[in-house]
Length: 279
Ligand code: GUN
Image (cartoon, rainbow, N blue to C red; front, side, top):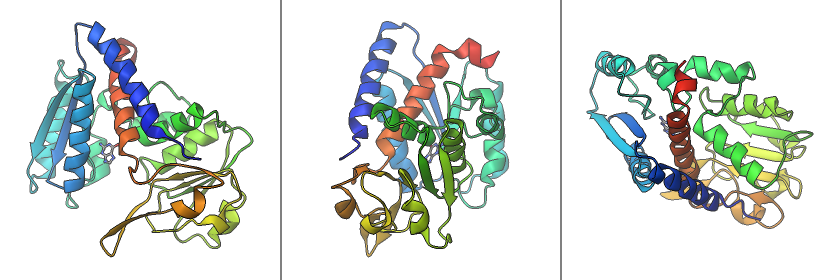
């Protein structure tokens, strides 16, 4: 059975669009981009498209590839200090010569609508969940909620451990009483973990890492892996083998629609709750 996140994203846009249309003041989404990475450009085009669809204002500050970290930091400081800008994001990945976490942590946490700064991630660690959490963990939880898939009593395997997405997801699941195993691409006998799991999330970016022999029937399989093999796009999970007796996220389509929908929702919620957030 397919977990249809496009339908959920459409529902979110319809609701937000209706609410913003009724409001005279419109929220802004500010994006900083360094470099012309094609994946980031198309991500940003999606952000612009859906921001405009729901009547949000969109502004892109685009720096060229060799922009120094200092110039980028200056721009962030200036946005932090501007009263007319409530929040903004820095599109990732940044070029290799820029220290990504140092840049992220320059963002004022109250303007961090991506929820990537140390201070905001720390809130998840302390179980202080609020209406904003970072976009990828947020859509995964939302997808499960929409299909009435609870986390209590569940064994979950998450394959990967990045600081801004997968560690926060493991914290979110732990906060909701799941039993969480976080694996690496170096985990020995991965199937020993996945076979015990009710939910498997793979972001290892290893083509066909998970197949039908590695999970029990009616496992929830969330595939966030994207791989190029011989010029062909392949996913972490063998969709054909897994589709029949499991709950699985669709391919192709990947995660963009939901991640973008969550950014739009976060921006809208930040707009609605501005006073609560900034005080
Ligand atoms: N690059 C890929 N996903 C994201 C995201 O959710 N936020 C930002 N800022 N950059 C990204």
